Image 1 (tube, rainbow, N blue to C red):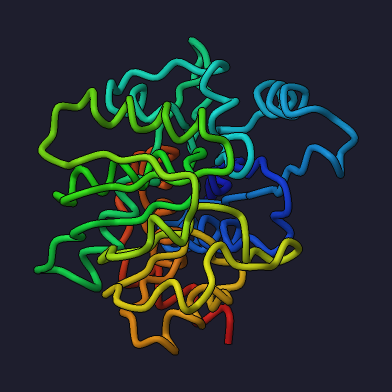
Image 2: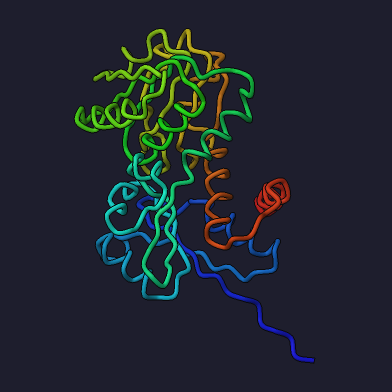
Length: 283
């Protein structure tokens, strides 16, 4: 009897500083659980001696079904793809690309991944007043997630005031009841906030640091860090010592990964089984 060879799904991740990304493990494990042979490559432009555009084009013509996009390319890639979802167009950042016959399609699973992460830890509580530090690609997605969660106020903070103002304008255009403010200093924005969010790369392996001094967190109720390598960042360690509820970036990573998997393959995955399998792989 002839046995059909397993279908191969070729995936990858374009980003800087991703040598410790867990995305390859997530997608390869998902493939194993549903009987697909999944490959997943880390594509780091500077290590390849190529520009982002060159790496993106190389992936497009090399048989990849799709790619994830991470820092610092989530905004850049929007001009290279077709985005059908008006909400994703409003976010202005893409973290998932599918290569279809009629061209690359862009999606964003960060905002839904963040909402799921928040609800898993604070299911019955509003975000309240939130200090959002970093308004780049993931910051935009998280901000839209905060709108969906019914945040009272979002205080946008960025080293680049133009980026913070641009995000504030996009959020205000949604017409929600959430108040949108712009600050040029994270400590000032954090004063009196219920939640504090890091959407900068500070704390990431290879970068280090923290976006906010520990004493500036006092009085807040919860924090979230979009960085997940390492999972226990200095920002989250400081928050835990101050007694705040901590939402790990790993939860966003896992949620966006499951969403991307569905987009790449059209196959539903048992999230609990996938989480357990990944953890088992790490033992």
